Length: 118
Image (tube, rainbow, N blue to C red):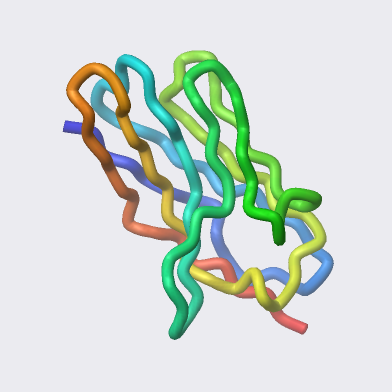
């Protein structure tokens, strides 16, 4: 069983930066995609960034110039660097792991609140 624990959220002024971390306990093996989603009040959860086992990244259009996703060589930790924060970035940010092969499965973290003040 894989558990994901996020950290690094908080209250930040607009224009500031922060880095979210997600540590996976248990074994993440095989081909997988680690990602960050966010859900703002009254809105659907959306994917903001993802990174594959081989390091390929994908970003939502509205964050690609400000967000950077990375993962460590052991593939058990994923980070999301957020720069030039905007009030519309306020949301709960969730870490996600999708194992594609073998034994497809999906795991979620508990979420980290990011609040951007004006």
